[in-house]
Image 1: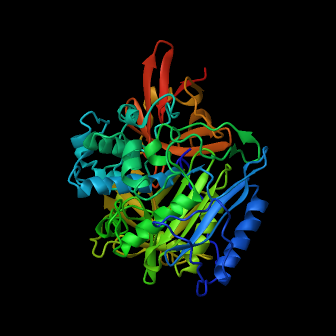
Image 2: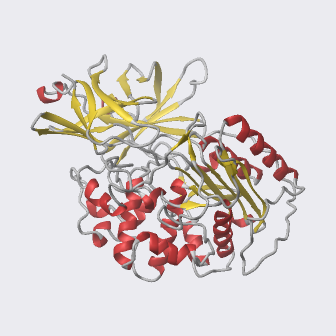
Image 3: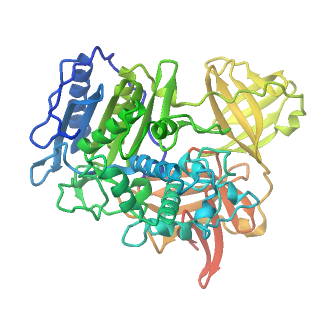
Length: 584
């Protein structure tokens, strides 16, 4: 599944300091180099050599069957190589020319195509999506659908849900069918309020691009990006089948039959380490004023500039890129996962440095991220530099009755409970309860032994939400929004029980197989979704007689609609486009 269908692991990896990079002058012909004949060996920089040795060892230890990677220094490829196998059974080695699915790195190309059409006046990213797709409709529950703009789709702030899992395979539907599938669900959050990663949103965006340009999305990227940049090995599943494409492998190393995704605009591109290096160099060249037919300086600087200032977000975002920013500089980053392959691309434009990695095995996302983050940290940045500045307590807040804060707060995977005490609040999060005294209007400080001592809790009204925030030092997290915890009515009470999936089932290694609605000890409803690999628990917040939302405020899989409707056999529960029936 694409990379945000589940929370991503982000490891803080210590990196060696890179000394002065020694780069190899490559034989160039019109800006294109050959990587087919042999792999470039690491140069004498200790930082590069150390990173390469780490990757070689990590690839073997992790069980990842095949990896290809490249490093760019001062705008030139200084190391590029394949490790392991593209086809283990046949003994075919992984090379820099092996095609691998790059997953959500595709989104950076979709964003670039958007900026090209914007520059030519064919679209305006500030316009509502419905201006280009009049057929776009969703249940809004009072929120303004016209606030779903192209820019908010690019920056994952539109409120469009993370995914729609029905008909995910390319032989069942295309990216232009997403607008009809999304019509059967609801906005997850008010547009412009919450950062919510959305694969569905990028396919709606691509549909708008195709409509505005009169060119189908794959052909649009081929004409405007791949060919102008010399990315002759890059394309989609229907392109150039004679090119060497990697096999796909499960975590135990077993080869598996790959399949193609419907959502090509969020994760459908195949590419190589060599082509992604060309792409990275072209973007960084444009950043420094060396424009090409595909990208110019104004375009790329806009994409690499901070473009979101929404109240609840977990990442700094440009247009199509996540941004690491600090006083020492910035980097642009995107990772990607298909059901079987993984990729990561990090650019440090001011230093003309980049790291590219692709892998062909389920679970190789950690390897790809760690490789990219080691490169990032060797250039003076930290993984924490992606986190937005804390919202902080309001600068001026009138004292309000503490009863306004009391109640249950829907988080992504559970509920927090806030109760009134004599001098402040009692705050229960999971298995822990903290006593916090009011130190200033609306701000509560914990006095306790251990690490929680001095923690701050405060509240902000953001859109329709009354949000609880927790802060320790410079680290801040929202802890959910207050709900009206009323007893379930008869219709909802009858829905408590186990559910089996019927009809369409997710393809791939990881599948949803069942669900359960139950009550916590305090009577609050929760939804358990059972995968073949484990269970996930979500608060269930009823919003109508036949619909509820999963709890939480971003960054993925929150606010998802859980709806009920009757068919000839009884009531059907729909979640992410999948159908469930209660087990009697």
